[in-house]
Length: 105
Ligand code: HEC
Image (cartoon, rainbow, N blue to C red; front, side, top):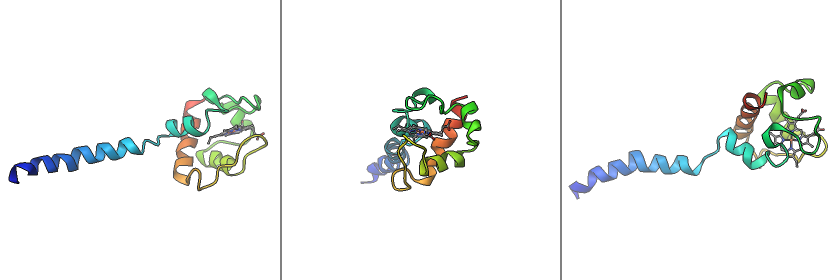
């Protein structure tokens, strides 16, 4: 039994965390690909080409911070589905917002 102890320690400190991070791979980039890229591939807008996710368009519509993007998800304009807290929790929505602002210029 004593010989197994190092293995248990290895499992706890290395394998378990690796497994957990592998399961919850919810970076802003992945969340964006999952929820948004269908209509906004590469930060564009396939439904309303005047409203892309590029900084110039966002600024025209007073969207300047990750919080502003979250507002947009909760109260979208015509043609965009509404994302409730149950669908995209606040923390993930903010992560998507930061990703959009730093990625599409
Ligand atoms: C079914 C298509 C669709 C999906 C999916 C979608 N959107 Fe949109 N989005 C739109 C449309 C259409 C508009 C323009 C709405 C309007 O007139 O305000 C828009 C507008 C926006 C705007 C404002 C752009 C601007 O220049 O004013 C932001 C920000 C945005 N979407 C972010 C997202 C994010 C983040 C996601 C994923 C969580 C997402 N959208 C998913 C269709 C979509």
